[in-house]
Every structure is written in C-alpha cells, then in structure tokens.
Image 1 (cartoon, helix red, strand yellow):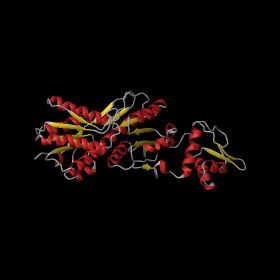
Image 2 (image 1 turned 90 degrees about the vertical axis):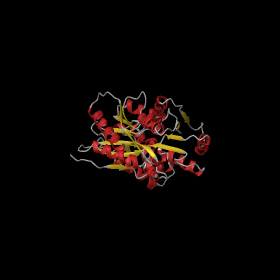
Image 3 (image 1 turned 180 degrees about the vertical axis):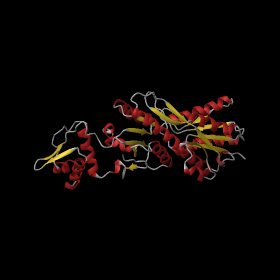
Length: 370
C-alpha cells in the first residue's frame, strides 16, 4: 500500500485563468458525466471544436487528448472520438483523495489547517488536495462523488454554502464543515469557540474599567456564523456587567472607508467627553485597516481607543502597536475535521454535531490602556 502522508495537490492556477484547452476539456467532461454526451456517442471533431470555441486546432486536440488520457473517451481511426462505456468497477482512481475547499489559495492559517488534516490521515492511503472556491464554480462539482472520498469545506457565505452542501448531501458525499456552522445541514462542523472569544474580548476592556466597548463588524450575521457568535459573546459580557452594547456595521452598499469615518466620528465623540473606548472588531483584517484609518485621523492607539481583533494573522504582530487578538487553533481544528471525516467515510450512519475548539486571547499593546 502506498501512503500519501505529506501530499498536497494544488492547481497550477485558478480556473478563471485556465488555459483554453482546459476549459474545453472541462465542458466536455461535464457533458459526459451529466449524460448530455451518452456512452458510445461521437464527440465533435477537433476541427468542429476549434470552430465552436474559436481556438486553434492544436488547442482542441489537446483537450481531446486529456479526455482520452483520463479514460473517458476512445478513438476509432478514420471515424473520430467516442464516449467510453464506464464499467461499474471503472470508478475514478482518486477515491483515496480528500478535497479541502478553502476561500483562497494563499493564507497562513489554511496551511495550519492542512497540516492538521494531514496528521489525521497519517498512515492511511488518503492524500489531500486543496482547491479555492473558484474551482467549484468552474464546473468541477459534478464528479465529486466519483473523484473524492470526502470533502472538508470552508464556507464563504450561507447562500453559496447551502447550495453546495445540499448537493453533497443528496449525493451522500462525506463532508465536514470547517470554521462555521450551517443550520439545517446534516454534517459535522468544527468551529472555534467564537462565543467565548467575543466574551473574553469585551471583558478584557471592562476589566480595565473601559465602559464604552463597541462591536465593529462588516459582515451580516446571517452570512457569517462565526461573526454572529463573536457578537453574542460580546453581548453576554456587556449584559453580565450591566453595560450598554453598541454595534456598528456599514449600511447596505456602503464603502469601507465611509464606514470607517462613521466609526471615527463615534469614537471621537466619546473621547471628547473624556471617555475611553474599546473596539472589538470581527477579524484581524478589518481591525488592522480600521486601526490604520483611525491613526491617520490623529487618534492614538491605545491611549484614546483600544482595539482587539480575531484570528491572530501574521500581520497582527507587525502592527504599531501590535494588535491584541483572539487566536484560533487552526492545526487542531484541521486535525479534528480530518478525524471526523474519516469516521464518516467508514461509518454510513453518523450522529452529526458541532465540535467546538478552545481559543486564546493574545495580549498585545493595541488594547492596553496606560
């Protein structure tokens, strides 16, 4: 048996930037798997394909060769190419592949997720393939059942996720959802303890006797469950300490800089009344951009306003001042997701649930009042 302990396959480029022959190949492959092109049916000739897609004969030929190499078509000399009959045992050789769908290809945290997933599949025949969400929107989701043993899925927003996960559910594809929970979808999910993170962040300011603690978000709670849970944790801390919660988020269609101006005006009003302010921000990316904007307006961090983010991205520690943040254990989340997926693959009957991984508040200068 061949083991694939440290194998991560990455596409050479996102589908949007694919070579033309790949686009033809994907379209024909889709037609084959959906039955639009039936077994033993003849494909368009290389010349016809070149005219249909406005490409060179060499490009169309390469697409056909790809299909032949994958065993999806056969050629008859002097007649053309035909759809190959797919025998029952002729299932894709990728059944030992685990697919990890993530929002974007380059991100520090996703590497840690992948390390954890790989560790969970150590000493098994499974290998890991990582793809960005664009890969799914380019016609690659119609052969998932044939091509993959299971999927670890990091959602972008609720609407897109519901469509994809329901499709997987109908096809009975093993899936574990990472970072967020999607209601009414019967799959295991692995999330950080975002509720505790929001509560801990608000309490950090309240313990310094900062009464004006605001929650800053740019995503709608209906779209991103992790942000919703952070806000609920924030509310818990505020009400337990008998403080008034204040949440600021952009209006529909409002540009980020315009929203930051609103935040500045709110904070500035409070500081002019000699009140210190603490901002609990939905994630580090927004926290860093907001901190930069406030400093450009002459506001001192943390002397006038303290800021706490979430995720502990690398840039957080490089800010001036360094950003206090709530860290998620990406490695542990990936490892647990892998273990749960293994269980789904082996067991046809599962009791699905949400699995919560503890968080840690990383104390730095951005939230420490002097």
